[in-house]
Length: 97
Image 1 (cartoon, rainbow, N blue to C red):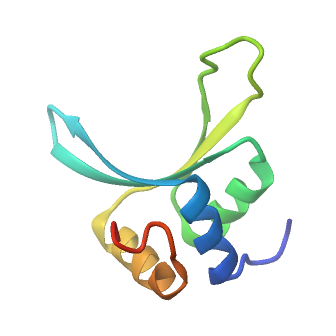
Image 2: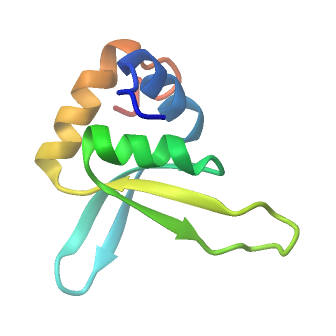
């Protein structure tokens, strides 16, 4: 998957598999999260190449489940740019954005 993903494709992926959330850390307080979980690693690695962020393996909760991965984008500026770029294409998560 060596080519850049289109914004429309990424928006569809984010609508279906993406998540806005928060986490709490004793050091940095509350952090905003933008992430996409999927079992198809190549698309998440391409997300990392196109938009930055990190890709990590998610721990299996059931032995019979497929391996899954998460692409996560940190940093408010990068998150804002990412969400603003997707906004015209979002359907399901448009209100959350």
